[in-house]
Length: 245
Image (cartoon, rainbow, N blue to C red; front, top):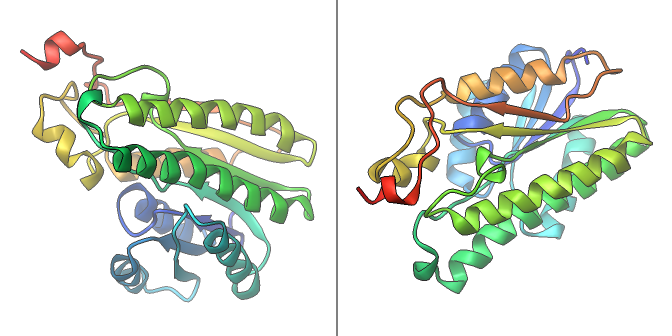
């Protein structure tokens, strides 16, 4: 896909990977809709990008009404959606016995339901054009269980299964769907994990992940990358015993 003048939606775009994606998509010539639940941070992100080709809309990805509004606003102000990146995600890092019901609901709703809703509206929009690319940023926590991240892992395993099914559904409309699995990334998302014993000696940067995703989007339309795993060379798996040492 040649990104010049293509319309891209990025959720969770006020900081971290989402913000890096916005920067790199703009640099490639795209028009970008940033969405985030944090209205103040979103306003600052849009202002710092300082481009006529970027706008922002506060969005709670847990709300179908918000996702519908995000879709309509993007199409009205920027044009047909070519790329939709489900990046918004949340986590709690603690033992399963310590999770509250609110913790569980929050992660399930943002990580899993939010991705489903984003894909639903992205696919509806792209079907008319019979082209497009949906990117679900998942996590290596969707590939293997990690102590103190059991519920988070559960949501990401769910997103992985959903993404694999969606890849088959979307293919009939010539729409590509990719799952991206970053390991540890140097963002605020990992602050709590870094305060504990971490298996990651060196983290990826948000720009590392964004660069890989933009490259995937720019591949020939006849080729689809179903899954990409991105890890630092010094990102190691670890056991609960090691965590408690």
